[in-house]
Amino acid sequence: MQASLPATKPHYLILDGLRGVAAILVVIFHLFEAYYPVPANHPMHHGYLAVDFFFLLSGFVIGYAYDDRWGKMSTWEFFKIRLVRLHPMVVMGALIGAIGFWFDPFTTGHQQLNLLQLTGIMLMSMTLLPGPDIRSWGETHPLNGPFWSLLQEYIGNFLYATLVRKAGRFLLWTLVLISAAVLVYVATWRGDLATGWGYDTFWIAVVRMMFPFFAGLLLFRSRKIFRLPMAFPICSLLLIIVFFLPTFRHNGLYESLSIILVFPLIVAIGAGGSVSGNWAKLCRFSGDISYPIYITHYPFIYIYTMWIAEKKPAPVQIIPVALGLFILFVMLAWFSLKLYDEPVRAWLKKKFLLKK
Image (tube, rainbow, N blue to C red; front, side, top):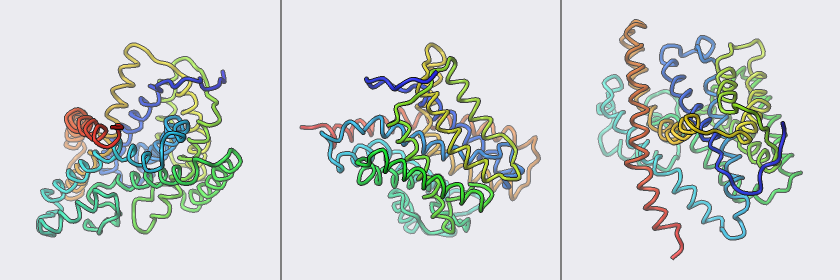
């Protein structure tokens, strides 16, 4: 059943939960990727599309949280709010990345760089600016690979605050349709969207952000949602199906249409659903750890990947290590949130955002 968004601002707990589901699937994807580096062989063939889902969710939430606040909020105040929300974990992710690189027994970072050089690269990474390719992987953010998508998140926020927030429906529709056409072209040309994190494909990172981010904003502004029972498990199952389906002859078309058609449907269903009891607790927990787990897990994946590449352990050896890492990632995310991120954000909010 289709319905309009309510006039009051609810808390979209299911969307929080779905962000957590996507983040956990990303972690699982990366754990598998160390053993199956070729996407066609990977059990979760399309797991990298979780990033595109994040962008769409972000566009929807940005519209929900800020569209009605511009009469009493300046552009600079918006930027400060977003920095307070996102950047403490960026600093933590860069720090973990630098420590991981220095002590990585396979990369032997301490033999490649001195401490001053690594500190400089870490400080650069804390700004989300691309850094030198110290791993020879071609990454724009070699201390913490997923930072490439955070940079795109910031670009999307900048474009929203400076240009798109004032756009009428026609202009926003035009931007979304053009971005969709470019996304389809790039995906079909390449055959997949498993890219954007390297210097040679940096422009594709922008393509991957543009459609879902502003489609999410358009979805919010259209104020259309779907009310279905069991919305959270239904949406979670849809995400899992999209990620785990095999690669196809027209794989790029499948991936781009998943982003253009399926992901907005999932968000519309999630925005219209409700949860209570244990489902609500699960959504809240997975939503709470979604950003910390995404931003802290990958420095460990570098070491894990090189261990598999160099030692070539049997699957029976890999499985307990992967399970142990997964538990570590969840615990690290939770403790980072409670002992660092939330206290730091509260302090920054009090110091820089609350009016005197």
